[in-house]
Length: 434
Image (cartoon, rainbow, N blue to C red; front, side, top):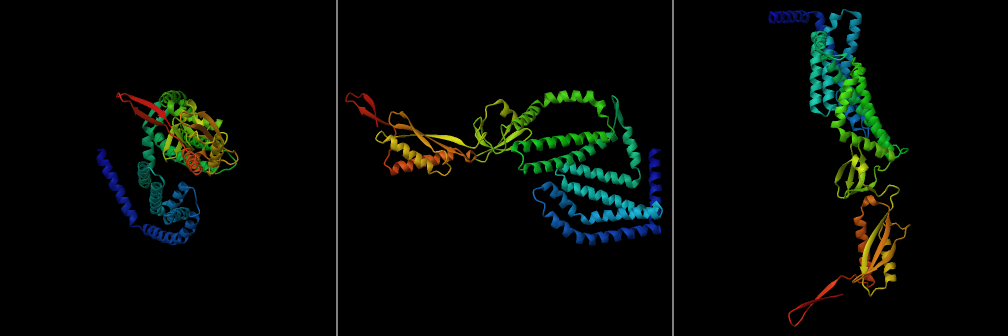
């Protein structure tokens, strides 16, 4: 019986539409729609170049540029939608609403297509973009058929009691859509604030990162509260439930929370900041970026290590540029006993000074440290101001400068020799010599 009633209602609806489609006002509206579409096309040809010139001036904001480009490519449809809305308001103000129903349908379809197409370009997640596009077309179809209120009432009837809260399918759907919209907007605004703070010269690097993190997290939390409150969800009624969920998340996400808190501590005590040169568990490099969960450290060979923030709190870290960028390096070497140690010290200092990265303000020093088995042993100490450029390479250049200087001045760098003397009775005797 229900199936037959549905068929009868569908036939009656089709009959009414056929009767409406042969009325003069239907053709008037069709003519208006076609005319407005042509006018929108012509107007878009004039407006698009002006907007495109302004869009080319957007630098450093890829997210904003992506939105502007998506809207720019649909300028004609935006104008067409605006013209349809103006025509609908005007016609309903001067005549019966039934005489503008076809324009209302065209406006609904235009809005649905515009919304879905723009979302497909803005949202990078293809699944989310397609899901929102399908929801948009479904809602437009419900509005055109005039059953959007009945559908909303049906979804609202699918509810379960959750303490003092009545949780319905309609509420969940509205909350999900509002969460997606508000959180996306919060992320965009947070990224914009973060970018503006990062280029500020009035703040220290640590404060820039801290302000960016607080802005991002705070905006997302506010967006979530606004979305849930907008659908009529009483947040105070979910206190016990959210507390239980919070305890469960605290155990399950213990490491995540620990890394996040450690990151905040690092930023507050300014122990590590972007650009610092650090060593941690054999990893030497400079800090590229501080994130909520990890620190990005780039080594000299181009590898990027993502080290959890907690490691910087619980383990020993060498920050080569904590107070300043000056770092002292030692180079050990030995020369022959035939050389004059006073002259060797002078030549070693001169060789170190010839290397460009060695600090001239802090003069290198060279000390005799040991009378070795086969050499006079020295240590050459010098300072550099750019440890992020590498330590091994500057040591290598100083060693090459020592080699060239000693060869020019006839100073030998000895190495151990071993002689084996064969006795007549066949026994071997080992003796050392230079």
